[in-house]
Length: 92
Ligand SMILES: [Zn+2]
Image (cartoon, rainbow, N blue to C red; front, side, top):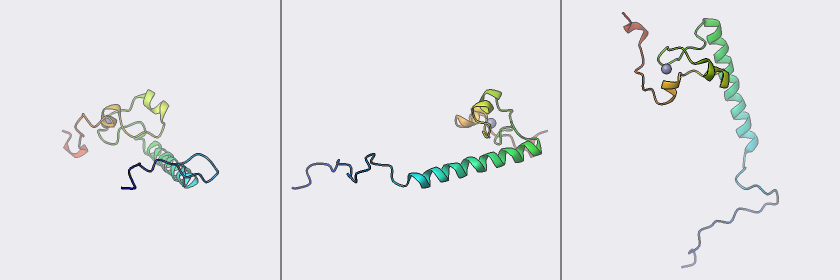
């Protein structure tokens, strides 16, 4: 048996920091996601639904919106949707 030891040696290519391959692509992808989230937030602002949970239609806490202005879910939904979603067509 030659492979008794796990291959735990990081590749030494001189630039240090192993596990950072494709960093630029990741960054661009993340910026793209943020950009899209901001665009969607602007659309909601236009429609008058900004600050409203897109799952249960409850108002989102100002605190949450301050932390992330593009957030789309209230605290309950973000935590796993403990509040059952309300269908707009089912309201009496
Ligand atoms: Zn919600």
